[in-house]
Image (cartoon, rainbow, N blue to C red; front, side, top):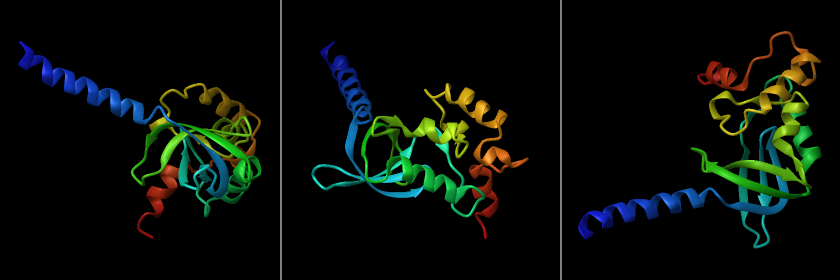
Length: 162
């Protein structure tokens, strides 16, 4: 009987640890903004973290509104204190999470300002962003001023081989 419990216990512990790894909060100062959905923070021990804002996808820098998105995130976060609720790690090793800069939800602000899409592929837990995106669309705010803006995931796919 005990033999059967050990593998179950080990599996349970492994699952708990893997879940805890993403239940972390990173706190620091924003020292860099790469684009409209990626920034770098420096924590109190001078460790740098590359952070990808969860559930949003901002235009690439070479896309229309890409520079405006980067500027908006920079205005919102650069040089400010940030708290990141880490959700996962992406394939590039970046922490993916909900970012609050000086207490303001940066993920939500980027969508509300029309400078990011809700990232449909990774929207889990952020479904409320769709209403915010629809509002930005309905008043043609930011990238929604264009008649047919290209989502970044489509733009990256089309430009992958160039």
